Amino acid sequence: MNVHTDAPPRELTVVPRCALHAVPSTLLIPLAARAWGDERYPWLACGDQDARRLLACLEPGARAWLDDAWVVLNVLWRTRVLKEVAGRFFAAHPHAAGVNLGCGLSNPFQWLDTGRNTWVDADLPEVMSLRHTLLPARPPRWRGVAVDLRTPGWWRRLGLPAGRAARRPGKRPAEPVFLLCEGVLMYLRPPQVRAVLQEFAAQAPPGSQFLADFISCLGVGHARWVPSLAHSRAQFHWGAGGWSDFTDAHPRLRLLERHSAAEIRGLWLRLMEAGCEPLLGPALYGMALLGVADALLTGDAT
Image (cartoon, rainbow, N blue to C red; front, side):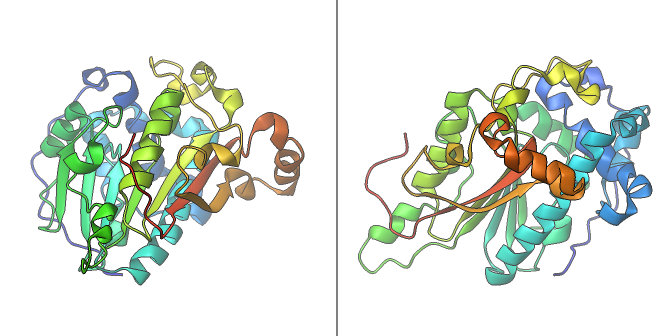
């Protein structure tokens, strides 16, 4: 895949961490992991070209987050999974749209630009305003949209192709869409997570995929025990109790792949997770790849 070249960086201004509210402030954690985690864990190096420069403008003391080794490893691991999973999707659909839901200041398009696909970065208005201030100009095939996933109708507001158009006689099916949702679902309430999955299922064209990370249901309410989150007001509200949590929201949803971060921490932890799944949920920390059934169902998104 071709990696796009950005315009020369703007003159950047240091933005204090306190300028962001609780959950948006967590965008600095994966930024720190991708900026400096390569040095500590070269076997999981992701080669993020933007992260270190951005952190110099946002949080000069962010290197302290590298001490939260568990979170740094999780971020680097999920980046590797993202690159592999999304890379396969765009190899099969080089003209398709990619969407980063809850994008923060991340830039996965640097790894996934085929030279022909399009990309949408979406987040809350305050985060998108920060992106506009800090990030250099993007290529014409990229756009940013302020959107709140907690509000129904986000699919249309992002201007994504609607799968239901394929029902019309003689209408060519829309191109599938790849959606990334990292570091988002665990901060939403369970009904909000269900609504996000329902909207994807009801609106996405056949062949679309949705890649999301998740925590165990045992982590709900315990964000304070994560060192890099301890001083924020962010809280975990949702965790997966079983793999069916990703497909029960809509009959069109399919679980295509399942991944656990235990795979980088040794055989003993993988065996422990497998044996304790009824109690721990599908993984302490993992990623789920969802797809939609080819047959479009009647009815609107709920």
